[in-house]
Length: 53
Ligand SMILES: [Zn+2]
Image (cartoon, rainbow, N blue to C red; front, side, top):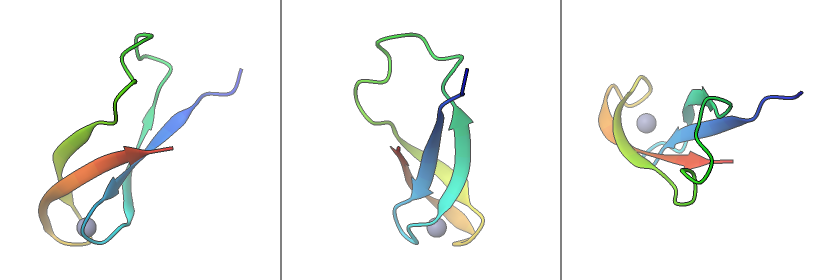
């Protein structure tokens, strides 16, 4: 079975900074896109990150 990965990209530089596997996720949880503040290694600061498939 192929595992799905969600790209988490920085909204400031548009780069993909994290990958997250979805196999451990509960069903029904991924209806709305997550928006979270993470450290972006490209911007070298905390920025808003969004999930994209
Ligand atoms: Zn960035």
